[in-house]
Length: 171
Ligand SMILES: Cc1cc2nc3c(=O)[nH]c(=O)nc-3n(C[C@H](O)[C@H](O)[C@H](O)COP(=O)(O)O)c2cc1C
Image (cartoon, rainbow, N blue to C red; front, side):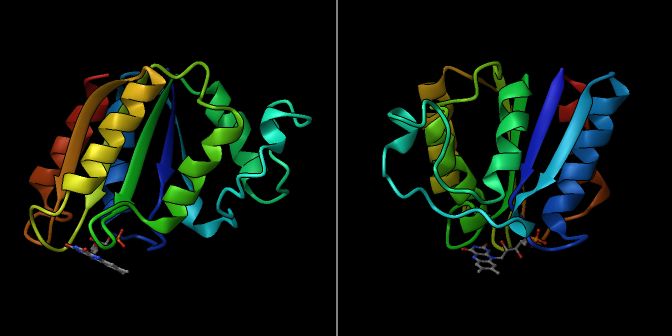
């Protein structure tokens, strides 16, 4: 499968990226092709709700920002993995902006599977992010392959990285 990882963490070598790299290692060990896009380092605006994409734009967003380079990866992926630090009980604004901009294509056409990787400081702060993720993939007709969460007591620990790696290797 072609697996696209949308990493919403701006932190280089941070806790979220550690989960992403472990997941990638596991998935690649089973022959999957994994592309990681560090979307927090891209310039992606929020959706303007202008509806150009659903009219004259015919599936193209009117905004000419870095989302234009992300769309081809989205439409080509068989699986999308969302990775984010928890910011105020949900995913980062940078990742949310990318998700909102799915609107132009309504949903990635090919992708059937998803996964979620979340890192936080406190434990038990995932309710909103997980609920959004589950409702969103339900709407898009995609199937969850697994969720890994890590907090301050487990971030970057060998056991947690093994869990993320195993998720990748289970695909
Ligand atoms: C703006 C901001 C908001 C945060 N909000 C939360 C929060 O609501 N709950 C929590 O447990 N951690 C929160 N954190 C901590 C991060 O989720 C945590 O440090 C995470 O491991 C960072 O991942 P990273 O290394 O990929 O940046 C917040 C951090 C920042 C910068």
